[in-house]
Image (tube, rainbow, N blue to C red; front, side, top):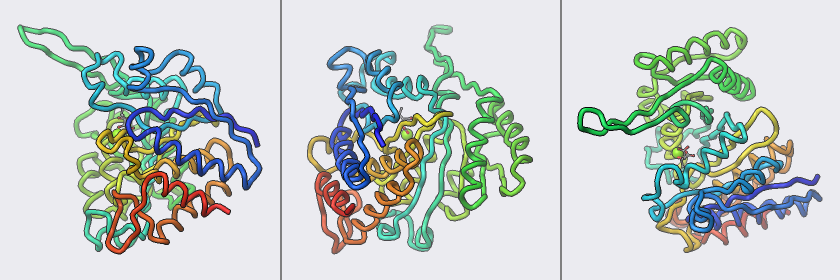
Length: 357
Ligand code: IPM
Ligand code: MG
């Protein structure tokens, strides 16, 4: 099959980890006789430096016209003082919005080989963690109106958090549908004891739950979820939540897996176009040093094959290769453990690619 992939390496460690994911994809192409054609587009700080904007209009068009988008990471201290309108993150949010990527899947899976890398006790994570966070990605406070104005001699800032029934329903449906394909347990996370958006969220979710009687549905408040994720993470299968709660909970959940460097994500639209990226940031402190963990990006590339290209077998093969690399004791610095073999970012990419034969 021929596919066009727009690659957005971005800032910091972004270019290093994307290169490793493409190395692995190349190996898949060779084995399965696919042809992936890559178009590179600058995004984030590197684009601000070159063009004065975090993504150009042509760059955005190349994302829209692709079969899928592979992203590294954006941002870094160098651009922290940029005005809000051209911050690196702005481009990421614009791509999500313009491509209609409303459903963000963040699987949180602990590879048993890495149980020791989690800061949590063995008795909590030891039995394996395998949950999926479904985060709404194009609504809520990320996209509501915001302003800072002077009121009575001081600055007052406002961020509005809107959600419509239809926005809640379409992400809720993704939650139920993915739960149906997994263990049929869905927890809907909200703050219905305080927020109107959450009360509407709950109402819509309850309505939807009647269409999915096989799914064991529950409501859970976001603060309690934060606590339960640490106390008893194996109680969860699929969690569905709004944009900002999902942002925060997925970083928290990543520590169940040992390192945020392991976590992939897929941002899906109503069609087959999707964007795939690790959930971590640009890690400027280790950028350019060949130290980053490319596995989150490699696993994101596997999600790309699964969700955008319908290549389940190829996706399984990448995941199996990652598993094997860990089995063989290879570790980047973030997941290093006693008696393991520490490797660089590019060495890890080579090892995973070479396991695809
Ligand atoms: C994420 C990131 C982004 C977000 C930032 C970089 C805007 O934290 O993908 O989780 O908040 O969505
Ligand atoms: Mg985040």
